[in-house]
Length: 338
Ligand SMILES: Cc1cc2nc3c(=O)[nH]c(=O)nc-3n(C[C@H](O)[C@H](O)[C@H](O)COP(=O)(O)O)c2cc1C
Figure 1: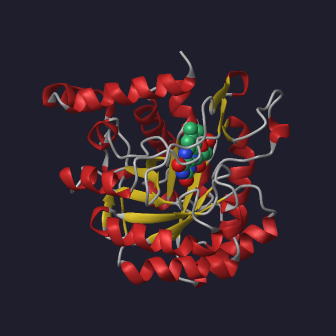
Figure 2: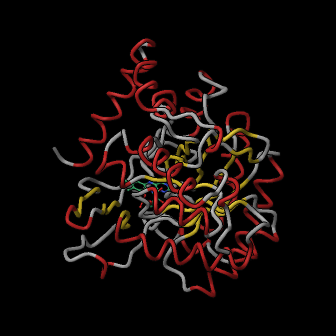
């Protein structure tokens, strides 16, 4: 099966599960691990464990109950754009199996904010915190971008535990040009005017350390509630046979994503919530990111290669690592290495 077909099949399966409450409950018993040592309160919300689903997996918020039952501590839906859009033409998702990585040039294919609003409203409040990752339509010019972000937040503010300003996808031409201190400050201001909900910024791994640190500081000074590090990379030297387009995720991103977490933590740790994403595939990865200053982590690619049991396994093994080191709980692990 091609990777995009496999994804649709999996999503349909999850949606079907939601239609049969006894089956959903059984799935949840098999998958969800509840332990008070994993839990944290962040932004006044309960995060039952630190492992979240990264943006792009459930762009349209169609499988929130099933993904919550899979054991995630939180979910991020989107990227959603104001208008529905088809994204780039397929094929646009490739496996680099030997590198345990993916390359995607989806281009924000999604059903638009109206559809997402309806879906989230039907099941609000969700069983775990749900963040909404927002981005501009492809046809919206860069100078008009702030209007897209404003209207997205206006439209979805009742149905988001947090928002993410996505300026780091490589698949919308020009989007990454919005990664400038003043532009990010302006986008944050525009969004924060519309909502009390925390607004985060998601950054790319492809800027140098100093530029990333400066941007992180600018975002925090402009009131960002958190930073998500990182989106996919366009460093094609990381795989032997890259496609000409699209961002790489998974194991090949692991080193850079972790490096940038450390760079940014040394700049802003304690002033906002850091969310680490990129190549996380073991409990040791999760634990190292927490110790390096991340309060939360997210996964995408590892879930594709390892399947639905991964979340529980990561949480179980994370508890073992805490025990091994005599660390009382997840909250006590955060920033131990900063
Ligand atoms: C197929 C695919 C689609 C993605 N779509 C989005 C998206 O719409 N918005 C976004 O912010 N990130 C998107 N991402 C990036 C992920 O959220 C994440 O930042 C990245 O994959 C690194 O994590 P990983 O190594 O665990 O996959 C996507 C990733 C993949 C593989």
